[in-house]
Image (tube, rainbow, N blue to C red):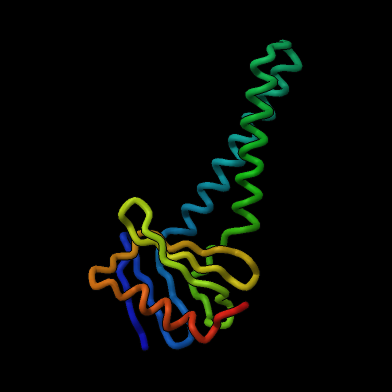
Length: 141
């Protein structure tokens, strides 16, 4: 029961053992972590600059930018997964979402992390039936 779907850049393969994903999601997550870290450093420097100049704008911009990027960094580190091979035992829930005209697959793992697969090319609308076939034996209450 190997079913292969094309992605915008890569492929998604449903096998009897699980799911194999080849895409650039890992690079995107690492870029998000890098950018959040750089913005947090900017927030710290902005706060330090406030201590030297007394400019209230530097204080609030540093706190807001640094705080929001810290939340994004923690969310990325603890709630998203970059696994390329996911076994059937690790899958908690699968769902297909249409976002801005593109089909996206959300794989919820048992450790409460989420693996997203973006831009699944599915001209025959088979993805939903494959997801239902995989998820049916693993329906959790």
